[in-house]
Image 1: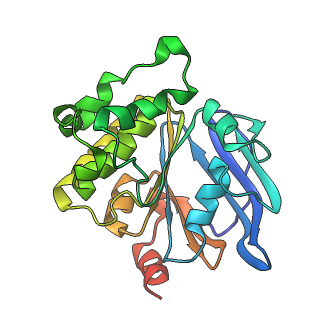
Image 2: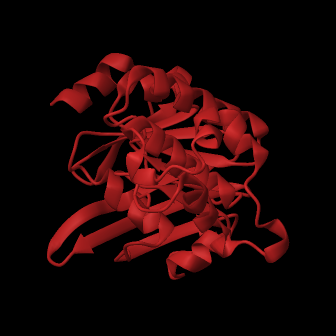
Length: 243
């Protein structure tokens, strides 16, 4: 298992290089480096409070970094506003889903139109292929959906933007097992398309392990383990998640 943090720029790839992030005097990320390639699922594991969400916020532009670089398809993006990053193909499904509870399912999905040219403002059929319940509930308010259905709605809304980098922050949190399986199948399908990089933050080890092409483990704001799935020593990773 490789414990090095060195990353190399490449095409069709997210490259995070030596990123530091501070909240005032508190340092949340320390020289963090990782890559996420199109056609792969990259999983980021770690206990609560180790910096995973801070890293995702830095990638999508919700939090400024102190040092380092974030590059997407060879274009540095760490100084761009979040809307400019979205225009380059980044989409986020945040922890807590952040759907609009008073809007209908259709209206929630259509909020993804904001970054699209007028000619592309439609809901891709694959959203309903992956999550049929959304089509059945188009007229229902988002706040009336179950937690699992809201998670499917949040993922569907992200897919409406036609992303090339999809960032998912703990999509299984508080979700019933049947919908966890649906979400896993959807992620596997999106990987198989080959035109999207998927960065998945998870605490549910088995879900992350089964989907991962590449994995990283964080602790105290640093990457402490990384490698391809076939290099993973499960006992070591589980130990790092339980300490």
